[in-house]
Image (cartoon, rainbow, N blue to C red; front, top):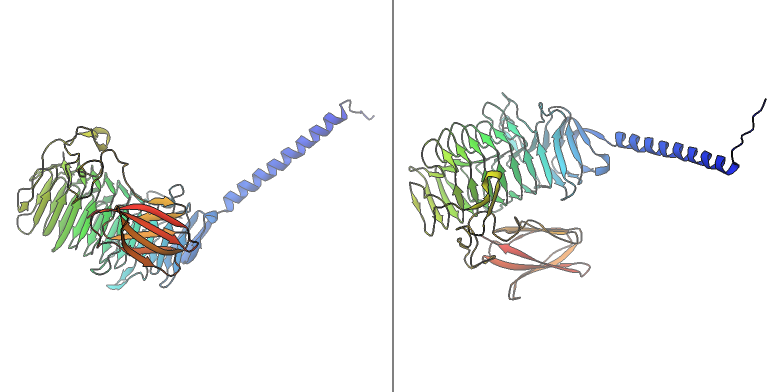
Length: 495
């Protein structure tokens, strides 16, 4: 017997259409899920070319090398995930340039095991091979890099990155939870040796954060050894730890290192000197400008904020307040035997030995909320307009002491304008101009409109220009593109 449906034919057709549409969308969803599962790439061995975002994550299944003469570019938004304890050696050039909304991640599949870090250059049996290019990292996050106990030099140093006679530029990067493990491990996040030169300063850190890194021996976040002209600008060092000096940074025999507009807070050295910063070795020359050092601790030594040995040190517009140590000088300790310090326009207790300077104060800087980590200045702070600038004015008659200028944005970092970036800003030496358009020429002018310098280029989308001969002040960078469009932005020269 055949039963005929009594449903309205139009209603029946509608149901059939809906059923077919459901099947189609189910198929489409399965295709998307399948695509997302398959959109991952296993990598090992020699690598060059471009790692594109669409093929991310890149699962590292063996040691990786960028050979000499080769370039590896990692696109914004990509994730590099180390499946086990593998190393990443760069003998050529590595460019990992994320964006503000699409960072690049270097991480470990197993956080306890970690990964072996990036080695720019290498040393095997005492034979050093530098990387032959200057690597560039922007908007990258490095986490869970580790060194192994009992390893060989220099693999025992630098949890996330080792720079061996090789240079790099870092901007807007985060280094978190990296470790150089027990033994001689130095530099929880970064270990740098023989970088830069007296004629070619390259290594720069701008707008980076170093958080909760652990360097067992020295340098909770960074250890510098025999480096030239390193510049650290607008960076934050928070909650880093070491056992034997420099909870955040340890300098060893460095020349012309500059630390500008940086925050050091809650860094600890357990058994030695320099809760945040320590220098040792010989011939150190280091300058600190507009830095804030607060709440750091040398629980087994001297200099809660900094302990400086065999160094000529310059402090300008800095705040060192409420740091602690077991022995001498809760804030800054200057070794009597081989160090000297000049301290001007700072809020700190003057170090006991070999220190000269003027226009300093020693009082509560009146932070907005130090208990909760807000080290901006209250409107009534004695540090406002209390610094020196040799003619450069910010919001008042002079800059403030400390790293946060009252009434201004936290940091002036990268200036973005139609795919063009200018950084670091402020700067005192090198200025990097990068654009997706081709740059034809650059004109630098002062506030009066007078042209200071004019530079013409062959077609190229990235330029590094030397502005070290410019005096402190505000300047305009006028960039002419090959399509005759012009971009004009202000930069600050602050030395």
